[in-house]
Image 1 (cartoon, rainbow, N blue to C red):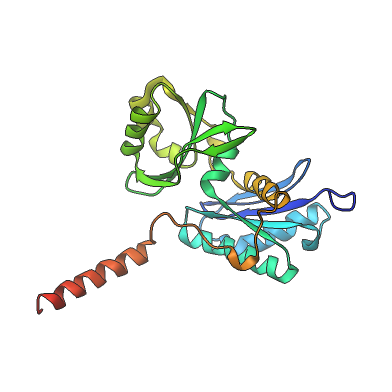
Image 2: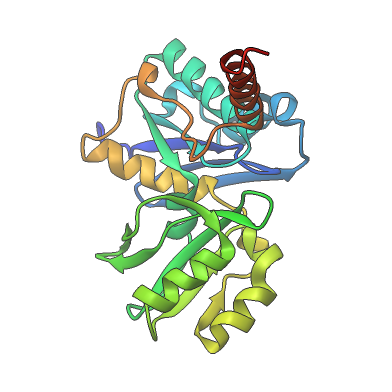
Length: 252
């Protein structure tokens, strides 16, 4: 509490096709706006933010900590969200928090103590961004670290290290890999409802407020996207550089 008023956080999520903004305080969610309109995050994000704050009769200065979902996810989308929050927080001299997509997805899930939570995000070509979480003291604790791997490798990991454990899957990768996971893992699989698979803003805002109250928020300059692998442009550039180097070494 600050002067008798609850502390508030605002988080944006532009990591997927669904753009989201949410405001929470210490009592819970105050408002959340979501829109699935890919490739227009740069046009929609600031108007959404203004409308959400206006609906709550709040000004940007009434927010105590700003947060962005930092990734993994869409490279362009992540840059839009992170840049927007950095600019806003800098102008207002407010602290920020970076929340990974996987942390936000995991903490939006509700799982029993004997179940692990596994967010999976589409990384194309049957690859997923993922991590494995266990419920602990009301939060989801990352047990595996952040990973980018083929979905079949994820199944192998569960078979080798999490035998007989029930698994709750969430994230947009569920829409692509649900049938495969059911076949490979049988009745060990549980899935969050489809309409929740890309909702991260409220969860991110909750985590940001928790970090701020425990002294873990940061200065605006420290906020940056979190990538588990290079972008396609960076991979193409590295490939070209390798070809050029090989050509020079062979005297071509």
